[in-house]
Length: 272
Length: 343
Image 1 (spheres, rainbow over the protein chains, first blue to last red):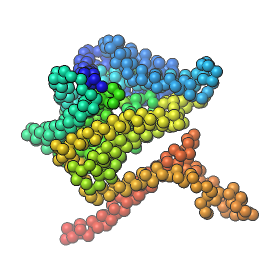
Image 2 (image 1 turned 120 degrees about the vertical axis):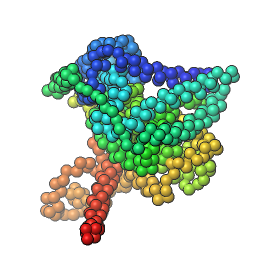
Image 3 (image 1 turned 90 degrees about the vertical axis):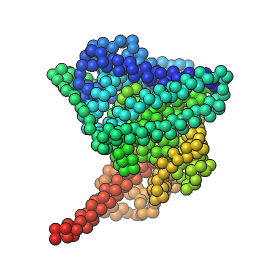
Image 4 (image 1 turned 135 degrees about the horizontal axis):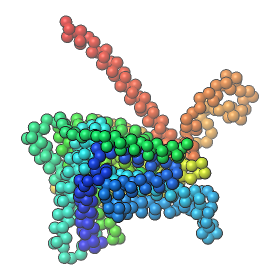
């Protein structure tokens, strides 16, 4: 393992995570259809749509659901290429690779023979298509929700859905400190790269990585204690108080009704 | 190992969420008891650490890199229940904000990676290290073995969940509607990667970090310590799980247990007639899992699954019964006290 590659790969990973969050945060502040909706109605409706994607048993309808999400992308003024790159690049690509053997291994009616023994079956083709379209549908809906909702609003929505305040505060605080740790990790790797002129072996890099992890772990414990003391100084008594100033208006109810119509129509066409 | 949405049916997602829920309740209760007001900041910081660790690329022999989960490490340092909450929070953030792991599959992902992984890892660590010193080699071995077995246990559950999909959810023409590979394919393909690559990576990272902690931050290795009695309880649960995994040995035995014959077997045993009473009541109860098996599933897997389902039911009934009895006793004991107070 070349040390340069290992260090750069880590630095690239950290910056990519930071970039994607910053991009999402920027988009969620822009004007657009979904950005203007209340986070609770949005979260509820997207959950409903993801469940529908799980329940549909018809490829055309599943494709239709993807088309609907693309229309929503357009109406929310998000760049279509940006969105497609973000959705399709990793998980559906991985799924497509995973699904390839299923074309041949699923028992059923043979469609095309490759050689004399191996054949692509109709059932295999259909099941691979189901998996791919379903994964793409669910992922695009999930990403669309995150791109158009500020994370504080999303947490407030979770709180409103009766998720215990303790959990919501842990999630909120974790999310905030992830960036601190990403930044710290990035600095550690940058510092190492700037001081590295030789090429280290994989074993040497592994031995370097262990203390990095251990010290970051010790640091996180130390910081947890400090943050706790700071919270105490601000009057924290263990009681969690949240400020949920969410307000739903007519537009939100209209959106919820539209989602219900879409969901019911899709399921009705599929099952009746 | 993060299962995206679309691989599992919504029914499976719901079941896994229900399976994970009691673990979360217990974990939160335990964590609040030990951490008290510190719960939010301490867990948040550790979860953030865990999130970033999962992003680290670890250099492997041969020139590639891989990610470690670090779940066993977290369980060793924080204690198993804090690790359950911490990793669940990380998985939630990954699913919600980074599209890594499905929103509906959250329960399944949590069960595999945030519940099975730290609990198995901690159990193995505890059993191997016994009551040894924080700086002992036995502890290091415990951590390495824990890291290796924990990620493989998590992978095993993932493979079973994926492998059950085509057996349970298919269209009329046999097209699998979700993950297309059955247990016979899913188990070896998922397990091979974890037994050979992910397992050693996890063991390596856990081992190296624990070794470093032993040398320079040994106090951190004592934070997650539990009392002696708790250690024994862990051993008991472990033994129970091991017994369930050993149930397929029962398949080796031929014949039927004495006195448990069905009507057909009674005839072959040489009994000239079938008692009328027996004939009448045989089959009045349609068992949900006949012959300890699940339909469309291999005998061994079906047998293990039946063992877990059966044990789960018995434990649930015992716990509920025990709780009811406890409540009854305390209310009985409470009466004279209140009378005294009113006097």
